[in-house]
Amino acid sequence: MFVWGDNPWTPWASAWFDLCRRLGEHFAPCTTRRWRAWRVNMLLIASLILALGDLWMTLAFASNMGMLEANPIARLVMGMGSTAGIIAWKLATTLLGLGILYHLRHTRHAEIGAWVVFGVLTALSIHWLNYTELVTTLGSEYQRTLAMSDDPRYVMLGPQ
Image 1 (tube, rainbow, N blue to C red):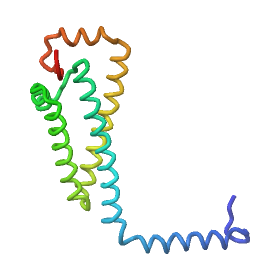
Image 2 (image 1 turned 45 degrees about the horizontal axis):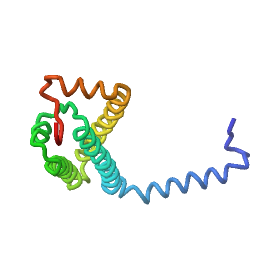
Image 3 (image 1 turned 180 degrees about the vertical axis):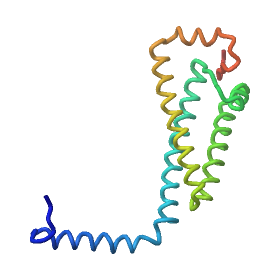
């Protein structure tokens, strides 16, 4: 049991707690705006990396074997068959959303929004991992099943 009285660690513990108190007072003015902005910036950078991964996976699957696209706007853009159009559309929407959050990065709402975006893109990345596992397991049989289905969500870039 730790006793404060005659313990040899008492001066060290007191100095440690005093240092922590002084540092807390020193950093108190920047805990709200500066640290929130830093957290939002880190979340936005991570979200951008995840969004670029989503773009890469979308292009890889849509141009090689086709895929089911749940987003109707993305399906419309992909239906035009232009890889540059898909890249431009995904980058524009991603950068617009992240840019708005960056502009508002000092506010609580932007931090909440950044966490939501990061959570959604993390869930999407997990979905891509599961989808890749499924395609790897089923192989060409899965591709034939997708191509022959009448599902309106099926899209493929390039020659079909």
